[in-house]
Image (cartoon, rainbow, N blue to C red):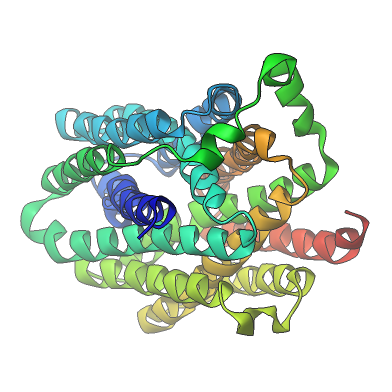
Length: 387
């Protein structure tokens, strides 16, 4: 096994630990907060806090990663930060504690840039495959986290679930310590004026990058507002117990894992990127329409397959298309710009949905998201060719 294969396996494992730490508590976050008297609007703010720090830090982290080309350090910082975030959830078991914790979780996710750029550097000629594999590891970590919380939340409670998050964050950092520098990392390190932040930031004006970043903003914003938050509350309001809540999240993540694996196969190339992006945005819109209108828990659980498709296929294609034509020495900055833009959706969408749900109804909030998805689908269909 050469150093690239060894590094890819180590990083794959670190990604699983990282996203386990970031999402093990997610299936029960919204029901837990609303159960202790937190308003829907405040829940939206707490969920949105996860995106706020990502918006602030992802671009600076990307620039620093390109200038210094030390992705290993950023990955270790990400793992440790994900664990620190859950320490706040354990110490401060209220809305304020979760708000502060989500700011730290967002900071940890800002380091995701280095996970992605480093992994893609191992497969320079197979960008789509590398992206899909990384999304697969991402979703596997979340899936294992969802299964863990489903099995133990009712018996052990939120503080213990958050302790699992702390341990996984430490495991991520420890695993990343085994990464070795490779020639492809050091040779792409820019020197002289090329390494100046001003030169790096020029890539942020790339039209293709911005186009797909806006589409990712919609996808991530809808995901954070529905499957990662208010869908679980809808199921709970219908009478589901904690086990059913967990199962619904597991179905979503299992679907995401399967579709992410599918996105890395030759069968996926039967349809073009343009057609996949349009199709999955349409299915996500259908999901947003059907969820609040359904009164059947099994039907809602089955519908969780659709956002899994968006996470597994759509996000893979959007990331890959955004990074095409970006020079190797500017990929971290470009990824930072891409992720900072879609973090805006992760911040704003839950807040807007919380406000709409509080002022009108949850159905109105989901219909708002459906309209946004339709607009994104149409935009991708008629603008893609110009990129």
